[in-house]
Length: 178
Image (cartoon, rainbow, N blue to C red; front, side, top):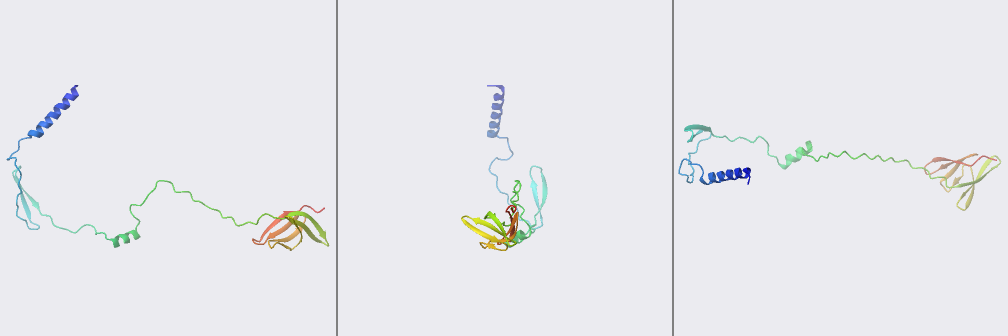
């Protein structure tokens, strides 16, 4: 065993010895009994004798007083909650989520569904030959196709049509007149 262990064992022995034997105290070392004191009047002073110091000390009796705060009932709690935000509210140190801005684009007309086959000029009026699937149509100015498209202008090399549900004008290239 080293020196440190011997010192710790010596300190342990001294501690155990003092706690078993204890220091000598004045008195008989028996059980202490309660001291009966006469009740003092409110606001009157009470005298306490300190045996160790051999002097007397005067203590002032305590006076009851109102509590420094209102008792909180449910009505007051709801009233305060409506007026002020709560003191302890949930808090997060995370950055706020990014704002998602959704751009709603206005509806657009679908692409021109007809395929151009050819054109013809007869008595100063232009006619165009169009096909949709296996169906071929001949159209002139101001004619409505399938209730959706109106032919507005036929001036080669362009054909101008209006998509009627959205009133949107589309221009189709039909090539130059030969």
